[in-house]
Length: 201
Image 1: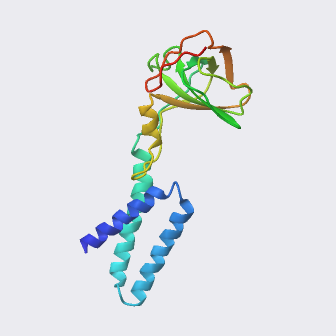
Image 2: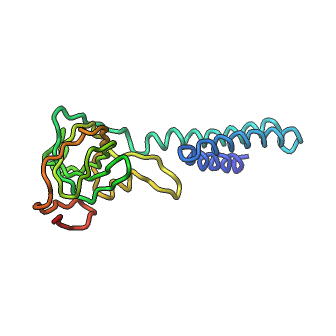
Image 3: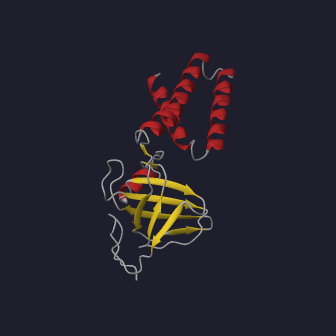
């Protein structure tokens, strides 16, 4: 009985890992497995007790991955809410989309006990202007550690940001959420770990 239960639990882990990406498909598959268990029991291919145990192990696997792994794999999301406006320089090419800018900002000074060289991945929604690598900016926003869900053989966003040297992430919204302080045209860039060395001219 143990090997089938183990297989059912592993299958549940696989489905649980996909819930955050394909919630409707995963929910439909859960229902389909339940119906399959009922059909197998009705045709006496499985006893009611065995079908219940197998489906229970499957559901436990789903819950274990969806709750335990996703919530605790990266620990709690530590947040820092500075009282004063933070300033720093953009140290990587700015990613531009129709409604937001994504930039990596090296902070000018320490933030709530963090190192002075803290790098923040800042997302500015509904920006009023275009910013460039090398520009010095100011903003006020809660900071949090990179986090993300795990996916077997898939993409771990939190680990990706950490490998890029990103210490914290923040999101601001509104035309005045980010203050332009000075252009980076005449400043050499302080390069963040993992970014190619360059100077904005």
